[in-house]
Image (cartoon, rainbow, N blue to C red; front, top):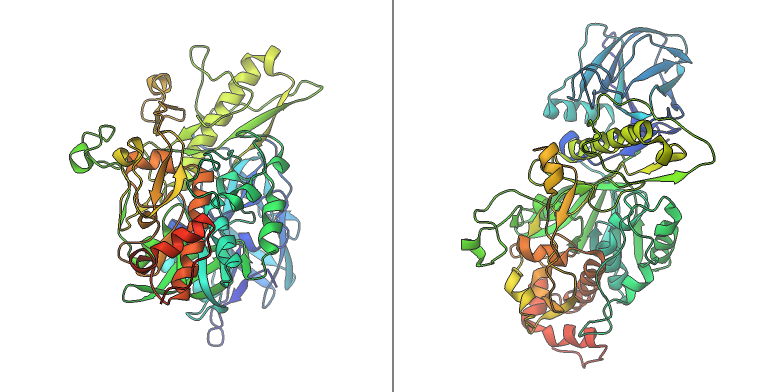
Length: 595
């Protein structure tokens, strides 16, 4: 059963708790699963992402041990209170509303809300969530208890233990197998790493926390691929990236098929040595001393937990999740000029990061349509609004005002308030231009640019990039500019401290190579990394972070993991003892085996 209910069986006449995790609803209807805040909630939730139109009910059947009276608790929040926000919904029990409206409390904190005492008349009871607005109402879980005076815990530690007990989640998750390489993160970097290693003959697990591959290049985020693959010193690099490339549909294309989700998955599934695990969020690392032995992931819908053991691991999560959990050295934010000697570095080190984008697009219709008033959203005027029928990369929030990992939900919600507020203004005040346009797509998964960078044996810097240095372990050739974003000046003028629009200044670079030493952890022996979380300074990251470049990093990790497995060494051992063989693979040469 995909519906995960747990009955807490206590001695006779003791209380019964029936926990229904909404992400496990049998029929999600028009609601979507959001796992982006798992790191701070230890749970996924579902959301009514209707872009201003109420979505179809989410529904399931819950099994009760007996009929009778139960106290209902609903875990939710008011995501945009003004003083009450737009995320209103109702809970239906056997088709009837429990009589209260949720999501309009005026509090933007996740907590349990009292749904009153419910008379359960059937042991198999139909439950549903009814969206009332289409504006991102959200619900984490429903709890029914026959202890009418019981109040469920809100404290995170106590709540997590409470959930695990009711969901029967033990300390021994299901074994998913042992692999030569476990790749966590199914963006372009991770997918290319998994394919590369599998084609070298390694057994590989590819773990992705969403239902699609591609990360920022998937239909959920819709960012186009950047970075050249045809300027490499090593022509073999970039071949897998080309396979994953679905052309250039631009950013925020309203046609989801342009991003090739199905094709990416089919390429991965064609690899006989590669096992794909979608919808799986890795939240735990097991290790012995400085060696990772396994990672544990939870299915974002069913809550089933699996354990993946392996010889080598590659952190391709973007957030550096595996490295962080394993205790790898990392950096988040900007270094100072004194620290790095970079002319483009900040005067003082700080926590500033590039922002997260939620792209959107409208389409033309034959008839005029309206859009609701949005008093809870960002407010625009004739003096300042953004006169565009679709977004591009500039729709971006973060910039040090939010932590891109622990405040991912708030960042996304801030972006939504900007998108909906601006669109509402355009529909009402520029009807001649926008009257026959509909808001057709808005991303609810944030497209992150920057978070943690895991420290390797070498930290790439601005001088390496601008001087085009070629180190003996130079691998991926990168071509993208130093592209560091900052709040757009006009946006800052009108929304100081609440910016959602970015600017940049592209600083051209000559093609340069990324040392292999940037692709493995300095202090965790068997950890590779590929993607935006590799070992660079903040300034250098501005160039290395684009997806075709990240994909080539993944290809290198696949080759290096093959050599590490072949000689039973570490990623560092590949650099110290087998670099000629790695270079030979990149050149397409076949070298005699080394001792």
